[in-house]
Image (cartoon, rainbow, N blue to C red; front, side, top):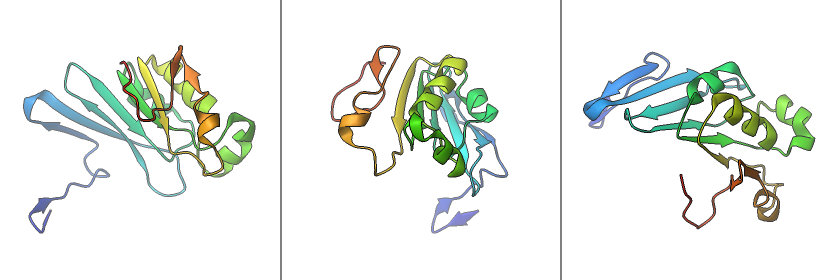
Length: 140
């Protein structure tokens, strides 16, 4: 569908798409109180996966499988995992477990509760690297 010269494609109807230059997009449904999807963008050399608003689920692991970078929500601290589940989100530890199972190369966490301070999230590391990126360049 075209609106104002913009071509609109519903992810719900097209979970896999191929674009020019061997770029593909795959979307899988996440587990949230409203419809949400996670996305994998792959150019046959690198794979970037972006997931927000979800409980831990098998689609997340499937989508992130062997990704170069996984950008994943971590709305709550692990001590609040019951609250995270209740609100359809994950904790930093749950996101790290997903990254472990999916065998990703780099994990970047995002989508934090306003209750989390910069000092708290700056301490989060996975495989010896920071998981939260501030204004510094990160190695892949």
